Image (tube, rainbow, N blue to C red):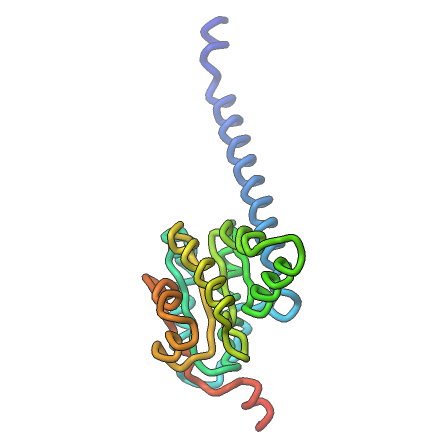
Length: 227
């Protein structure tokens, strides 16, 4: 009798294993739900349903970029956990945000914490904090926590002020030092334009060990207007 108590039966062990597996899956499902909910709050209605499947291809160059991103989508967990980035650049209106968000949503679905912010909101939130009783750290702090952060159009259409440049650098540098994955989409034609727009310190950190893809095709909105 004592031997039976001290040595559970194979059936009992199997039940315990199934219970542990059920508990693990339940925790994973809750975490996935939280990650997707948090990201969707950032994305809003326009980008919430972005995927590679519903991205419209009208130029052969798009196919090459989408094919590269399909590979990344399959490897996104390893990519993010390694602290690697994604840098999409090119003409305005080419769907860079759509493409980046499609991969970002896959990361969230895999249970990785993911956030998205654009330059207007980032610098606006910092300005609001300064006008109140807050600080830049109140805005940047939460953006240092997620496994992956997408920064869309980090430079405002009017350009970037010295103050905003410092804010952007501090955010990028601190995530870089922590080996956190930071992605970026920006409207520049190449590395020279990116350095002029973002500054070499920011740009060099964003592209270090990152996948860089040039979205060189024409603006979707302009094409739709003409056709």
